[in-house]
Image 1 (cartoon, rainbow, N blue to C red):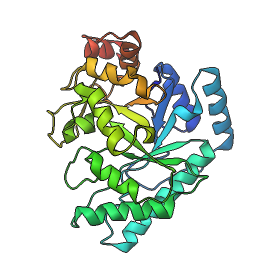
Image 2 (image 1 turned 90 degrees about the horizontal axis):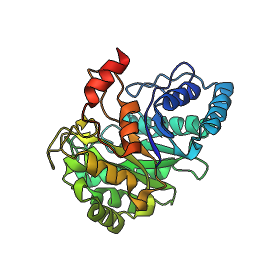
Image 3 (image 1 turned 45 degrees about the vertical axis):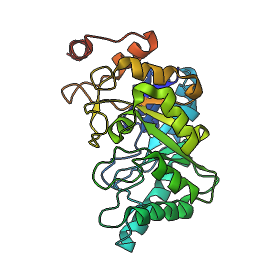
Image 4 (image 1 turned 135 degrees about the horizontal axis):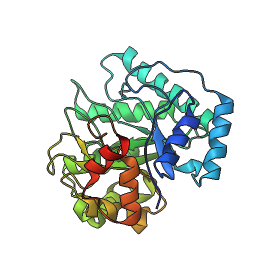
Amino acid sequence: MIIGCHVNFTSEQLLGSTKQAILYGANAFMFYTGAPQNTIRKNLDEQLTKEAHKLMQENNIELKNVICHAPYIINLANNLSEEKWQFSVQFLKQELERCKLLGISYIVVHPGSAVGIEKSIALQNISDALNLIIKEDYPMILLETMAGKGTECGCTLEEIATILEKVHSKYIGVCIDTCHLNDAGYNVEKFDDLLNEIDETIGLKKVHCVHLNDSKNVLGSHKDRHENLGLGTIGFEALLHVVENEKLKDVPKILETPYIDREYPPYKFEIASLKTKTENKNLIQDIIDYYK
């Protein structure tokens, strides 16, 4: 079971992220290289990176199961301002360079939002941007499936497929998000059928990461509000089936579930539940008691 969660990129950088993942019982994790809302980035410390890699090896965390997430401020879909679009292209290139120095193989990217232009043009803009960015020696970009909030692109499998078809490189993949799929109208409770649909439209070989989240919203709500495992509309059993699915056994599953009371990380307990295949009916109180 390759299961992990989102962790912080602390003053110890990748080393701090690795320590946090180990505390949660994870053998995979995801991080930002800086705040997702701005462009402020500290120089990477090569020694901390080496120590992080060593600690991963000692704790059975394979580097290929460590994922970076690109900042939210990148929007490859909208080019009404050529300057802003070029900024997104260049900033994503910078993030890829940082990931390369860290030894990371994958970076998850939100496709972007159309915001005032036709969706078909927005999808073309994303493909054009990716064609400018992708290089063989860069980490692979994984486009994330989105919930369809506002003018988001990539909220249907067909939109993701349209973008991929126009990218002139095989070094491009996909990250599926269970909450986003649910909110976009795809039934995660019928995951085998959904995997068949993903295979037919995108190709399962393109899926290199799963964001494992329950949803606060009903199927097709287009709202994108994550919930803790078992407390949402998808449910624990359906999410456990995602984790255990043989077709995705080599793909890291990453929790992005909300902190309890916006203060207490749930990951140690959610990962334990998945490992034991038993839903924790007292999840919230157990987390509060543990951290208090």
